[in-house]
Amino acid sequence: MQYDARTALLVVDVQNDFADPAGSLYVPDGEAVVPVINAQIAKAQAAGGGVFYTRDWHPPHTPHFMPDGGPWPVHCVRDTWGAAFHPALRVSGPVVSKGSEGEDGYSGFSVRDPRSGAGQATGLDALLRARGITTVVVTGLATDYCVRATALDALALGYRVVVLAAAVRAVDLAPGDGARALAQLRAAGAQLQ
Picture 1 (cartoon, rainbow, N blue to C red):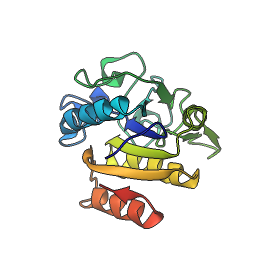
Picture 2: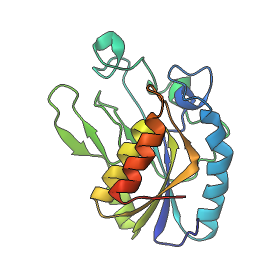
Picture 3: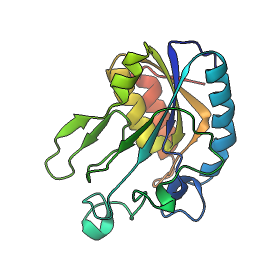
């Protein structure tokens, strides 16, 4: 991947609950993305590109969680070990938190109220536009959820989108979900590398 001042690396949700085998919503092989992403961070910064991070940052109770009627185990509760970035991940750029008011926060660009369905933007698009970014390189966890949603929103917002296949991993609740997500992204206009 070639970076320049108008290209940003997006690091999606490389947090302990997803990237560590002890995490509450561990993505199989999730920790393997960390060295790949760190190498991309170094390349992007050396070329003058931006590096931006997203993270789930949930309250202890939210309709997003199973105990409160949602689909997911409790994960990435703000200010806990599970919500912290993987300790080997190099973090040196703006961090956009999502789901902090109990919303569903799959995309780094938007959140949605799980009861009303109303959506609203996060600050990510504004941060990218302020830097003059036109291309985003999407990495992180998980391919079939937050990576997919972030890349689709980026396409809808008019960015050129590249997804680095070596730097993402899937939950695969149903076998093949990750592969289907990548195929959907390619069909929507994303480049896969």
